[in-house]
Amino acid sequence: MTVLAQFPITDRWSPRTPGAIQLYSLPTPNGVKISIALEEMGLPYDAHLVDFGRNDQFSPAFLSLNPNNKIPAILDPDGPDGKPLALFESGAILIYLAEKTGKFMAEANRYEVIQWLMFQIGGIGPMFGQLGYFHTYAGKEIEDPRPKERYRAEVERLLKVLDKALEGREWIAGEYSIADIAIAPWLRGLRDFYKAAELVGWSRLRNVPAYLDRFLARPAVQRGLLQPTRG
Picture (cartoon, rainbow, N blue to C red):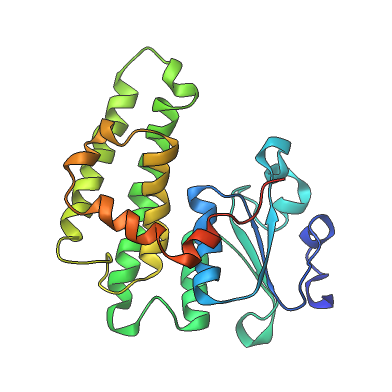
């Protein structure tokens, strides 16, 4: 573990497994992207809970790894050229893990996978999150209907784009990929946690509901959704 001792975050969250990737996260749609990917790829990892209730994300230890105070983040003791690698931003982590293992981002459709990964990062994540805020959390107390409607309409549009792209396909880029690992947790969040599915026409979609069900049926997904465990 001496290779990770140079990283201050390990003073707060001690590594448990020699040589394993250290994951600092919370089981949110962004967080479980990485635990699911690690499970799917068969990589050993230690999952450390970054508790937002305790403001762990603002602690000096966490900020030493991610100055943007967001989860997830990782430390890989066996990074490029055998040197430890610290990395934040879920999209960057997914690309790194796919390249490290040679899994879920085939060379033949590499850029199609990246395209749909960017679709999630730039569209689905921000827009679904904003709708969740205005529909489910504190924003629902705002009387002006325009902010919620803005995000509702955009989420509905994005779902239609995704639904059309899934026509005749099991997975968004053909074969199962990191793009699916990025997209599907947000669909689950929209349906199960924000309770906003029918608000955006979920029942009228031809392909998205079955796509999410296929994703959630995967054993590695089921394991990854539970990591890191909440205290």
